[in-house]
Image 1 (cartoon, one colour):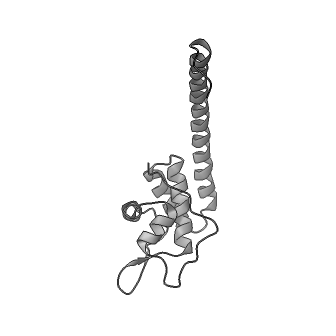
Image 2 (cartoon, rainbow, N blue to C red):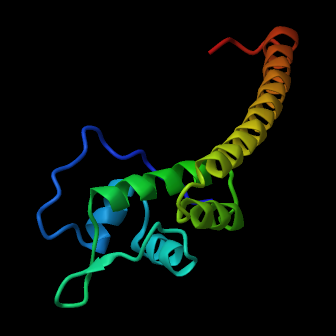
Length: 139
């Protein structure tokens, strides 16, 4: 899973000619290679526009979509799941199906959060044990 930083708010000013792949990747907290990989895997809503030089150019709608991919990856959705979601989103009138995918993913995320909370509680118990029973000072 790629570690990413959230995109700063408010949205950056995008020049009329769009952003380069490096600029777009940086704003989304991705490496250039990761962004290229996402494109190759069919995870972008549409292919990036191209400048006359052939260089990829990214606009607000691209950044918004990439932010969504980053969020889904950050919450554990596998690439195959994002690819399937992307395919659904490309179809007109698929809003109910999109909602269903997101609701299912939310359930998985909630399960993961619950499991993480349980693990955290176990860690807290161990810390308490060492601090109380073994005489280590509190931090």
